[in-house]
Image (tube, rainbow, N blue to C red; front, side, top):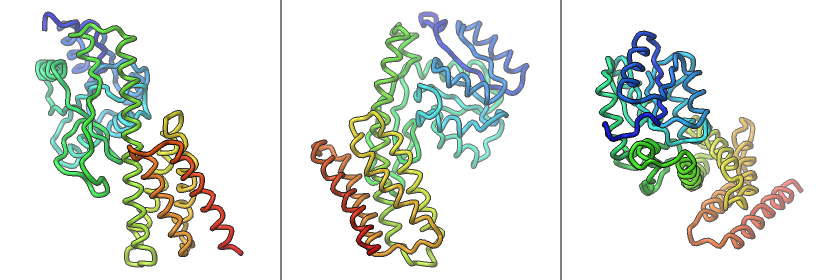
Length: 318
């Protein structure tokens, strides 16, 4: 490690025990890591993530003052801070299966069981300097690839994404802060595009299930959950569309979200026109993200679909 520029690394340490936190910080300093941020609560961890300069986060997954898994999930989905690619090492006091699964599913890079030794952490850091796992993007997960099969609604396995390793960029390649920031921004744009494409796939899956269960009383819970999930997905898609090459899909996503909200209403009985429009709108969203689609042609198709949507609803009221 002597040839690595560890003094330029920014590491946040989230640990509830002040004595352990102080001991680890001093041990990091002794090994050349000068930029260690002391975090006694999740509020402090979120502040460090929001600052956008972190390379590594080492944090107790049960740290008070917030929800570790929720924070990492939001960070990976680019909803917390400016860098969704921060290397994350979670630490936990007991290997509770449910907690371990939740931590893994939020997108951490590694997990260590307490008591944690400084050498165990440094070994993980050395490993990350050499390489990091590519990311996978699904409708509800962004993080290191650990999955052997797609989840329901994902279709074919997603392509793996090579993501920035600011740790390696600093300590091995000697990249400047500006160079690293450009790397992060470029990869974040690609990550957002993958997420939008996965949303399009998920929308198709949810709509098929919703339409299959219309009127099926015994499937009420699944139907209602799918309708609520469709509203959430279309809302997130609409936000992610802003300022992208797919901005022309925004009107379509908005119309689909509005119709999905109607399907969520307990007293709403979707008729044939409603069901047909829901299906057409979801198919148009999926086609809009097709690799072989001409943007202008898709825009016209979307405009026509939305116009027919409005006209059909007007006609159905007459």
